[in-house]
Length: 128
Figure (tube, rainbow, N blue to C red):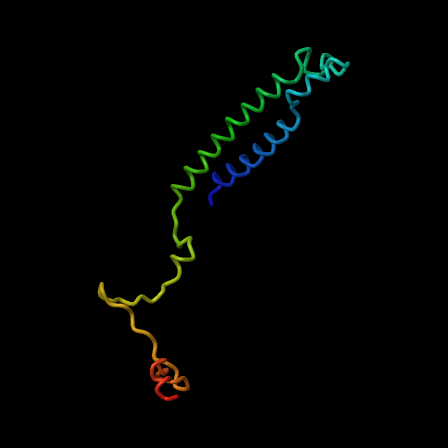
């Protein structure tokens, strides 16, 4: 990982945390019902219009930057040289049995202590 990739990842994570914080600071649409009972936002730090326009614009700008860093990370990852296989399946070399198209692979031989052949039901009735 080079320094550009590391810096972009750190900036991306900070943007994500800032977006989460700004979204949590914003009031929902149901919060306007409290303004009728004296909970108006006319005396806030952001002015008489309230913090809605400031926070929503800031959130939109941070979201645009988040998308740009996401695309940048995707570009950097797609053009990164890969020296070693990244998948476990690529690292494992399983032995393959080659058979012709209609053939099935041979079954293993039965164990020596197991009976070689089981009697059929017809043979059992003849013995009784």
